[in-house]
Length: 329
Image (cartoon, rainbow, N blue to C red; front, side):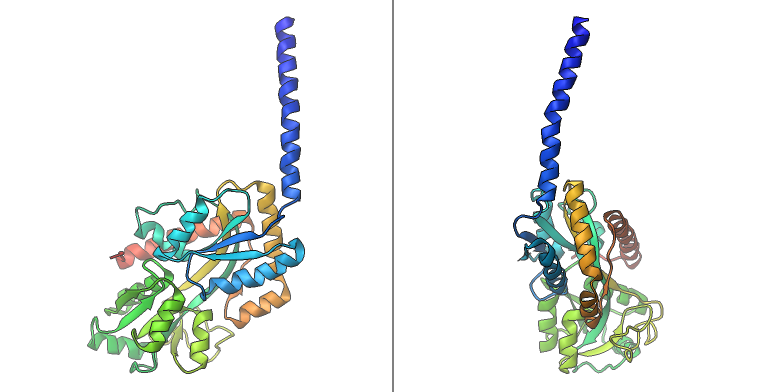
């Protein structure tokens, strides 16, 4: 009887000790967020990620009264900023704008990647998806994809293409183009999409598979020309621009995605709050209109759907990389 009584008392004490912890955890989630949220952007300022943070951050601030504060940490195709975010406290106050550059192709291209794109992150929601644009400096003697292929075959290795970094979608886009078209374009990596576009506009490189948003101002000003959009069908923003597939390279597709994630271990109730309010922002009519004006499509998903999406993209990218025999120099 004495032993049983001791066990009963011990169990009661344990249960009593857990109640305040549970209440405290719930209180923390209810009060979240009570300060600005740092959003690590693993690429240079001025890229496709910035409008996502700005548009969604404006909407969530209306609800929370707290800002999204962008922290640009460019380098190594997004891995520097991603590693920083992975090691941050899992309290919901540090988020990462992950994308296919930091979380898909690089997984197989860099066997020494300092993080696991699934295990080391809490995936909160996808943000947007968008096709790549094949853009060129006006000096290049090609108006269509077929003309570019013909030109590249007469000048193997002499046409340079810019990318936002080794392992990025713009890098993969060029190498898969090489493989499918049977040409040799020379890769020139940069630390971000905006830096690559700057050199493309100045004529230091000739072509690029660019994020659509940052490239459009240069297209509108006549500083760049579009040879094709790398989507399955023409897009509403550019109805007169043919796809790469119909313009000379059948079956060619290349696109990107951007999502919200954070360090592994963020409490479930905080993840649910983040997801609910971010998804609500992504679905807001003015936000949807702003994104579509940039040629991108909002993609609000649940945390589970977001992780599943990233897993599928890793598998798809890995297959493409193996087939095209792409490597980081």
